[in-house]
Length: 392
Image (cartoon, rainbow, N blue to C red; front, top):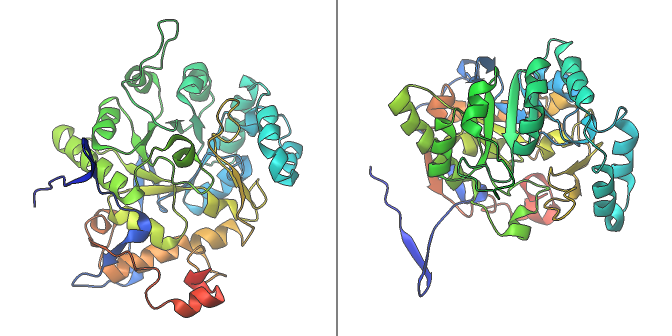
């Protein structure tokens, strides 16, 4: 079936396309079901295969070296922010305690002060080596500017994956003549490890990032629980539409080159059902922050804040209290202690896939999706009134 864009008239001279959010869609069972024991949720990025298609966001309240090790041991991936607290301070613990204890009115100013401490290249090397020393996967994140400064250190320190992340990443980036922007294509070519690029939300940019040599593409602008980019900047595309756009680029790129570039849905994903919907829309895996921040072992101790929160000129994130609800093992693989879909995320994915008749991720990407704005409210009046289950 050929896809045709349908324009909506906002007013004279301005048209728009309809986009859909996670809570507006539902997945439709097919003609078969499967036993959960037959489900394969594995995926591959570069030469690394993981059993759980979940990546923990590179946020200081989510991943430290300890959490990276735990996630790796469980079959997932944790990404360490190399421009955060972990590489600015020899002992991050008292700094994290300040961030989690300060009041709302003092928070932004404190963050800007704490993150003004210079990044120490020797700490980049140490944090990576600390993760590798346990046999874990060392996945790390830098901004494009950080990548140009510290990319060589990352490679020489033995990292396994590098994410080059910004609110929006494009191969067509204009800068003043006095500045030199990171050449993403040359950078991916020179790096001896897989480089994941993001974030983007359109077919065209996703395709350009793949052509530049991205080993994976991050999809999502502004849906994160602690992100305020959509309010501050007014930009973004709801995740299901953004994922479908970029997944189409992946499939087209694969047809042309034989190279399969995974799509990673990043942001706005809270429950097992959210993960299922993102994969059904075309994602190969998901990146999540706030669900992992709720783990007992998380460095934020129940608090979560975005990567752009400490910006010295225009903060685009805030600190939220997500509370501590269980261990990272309970959150990822169970057993669940909560009934709202935020525990045993892998179990939810496997159960959904078995119900939908999808044996692996590729089959899950092909299940039928319907527009269902009443999906989370239909028949749930008592849960809503009593703040139970889906009504919390």
